[in-house]
Amino acid sequence: MSRSATPSTSGAATPQARRLEDRVAVVTGSSSGHGRAIALALAAAGAAVMCCDLRKSPLPGGFEAEIEVDTDDLIRRNHGRADFETADVTVAQDMHTVAQRAVKAFGRLDVWVNNAGIFVVNASVVDETEEAWDRTMGINVKGTWLGCKAAVAAMREQEVRGRARGRIVNIGSIAGEIGQADLGAYSASKGAVHNLTRALAIECAPLRINVNAVAPGYFATAMNRGFFDDPEALAGIHDLHPWPELGTPDDIGAAVAFLASDDAGWITGAILPVDGGVTAK
Ligand SMILES: NC(=O)c1ccc[n+]([C@@H]2O[C@H](COP(=O)([O-])OP(=O)(O)OC[C@H]3O[C@@H](n4cnc5c(N)ncnc54)[C@H](O)[C@@H]3O)[C@@H](O)[C@H]2O)c1
Image (spheres, helix red, strand yellow):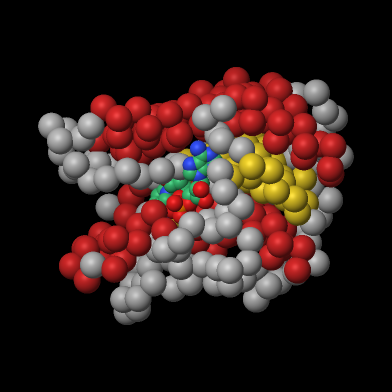
């Protein structure tokens, strides 16, 4: 069993089926961790990717391969199409600007991935601060909602391509499905992301816009550096996941690329666990 963090690939290692050829995708929080792996996977499948994040470079403390190269630069170096826009998911105008820039640069908007999210700290309900609660809800829930608003506003105006006008994929968490101690704000935020996904799937089905979510287990990213550097915490993470080794952000990228494609044409309102079996228990 591997007990070390496995870095994600550079996006060039394994050519994936080009099932997103000519599609245009936005990924929020694309500079680091899952967002970077998602952007690379979508680009490897043929999509043009409008990257957006608070910062252009990966967060320090991440496990990314080629961490010194920004995500959009890496995509272009791998002969893909990408651009970057600085944006805060909690600002409605930023989300609309990103949608407009994607359409202007690449012609339309097929896929929107609401990935940006934060985890502040493990704390009991008594110790967790209101500031931590508000920040968590602001970025994880309101940020996802604002991303959905911008995506649907742009997608509903365009022609159907394949089976859909557009596809939205939200990044939730196993914490949105199961209870864990000292994780109140984060769990509540991800539960909200999952049910927002279901509500919008129903609302947007007549528009032919799929809305799904991916719910990751624990992965080695900057967000979790503290846990992965602590042998006791790391052993606990391994014990939680039934699969013999841990997944990598590339597993999240692959799941999102599937949900973003026509292969997932009639899937909407689904919460897809990518968790090595945690939520099967
Ligand atoms: N790492 C895990 O184990 C894990 C597990 C379950 C779910 N998730 C979810 O996956 C998503 C990505 O997490 P990660 O582990 O890659 O985190 P990360 O901290 O490594 O990267 C998050 C990225 O989002 C950006 N970001 C943060 N706030 C933003 C904002 N307001 N606007 C725009 N960008 C912003 C950051 O700059 C960073 O580049 C999050 O939604 C997280 O909750 C992660």
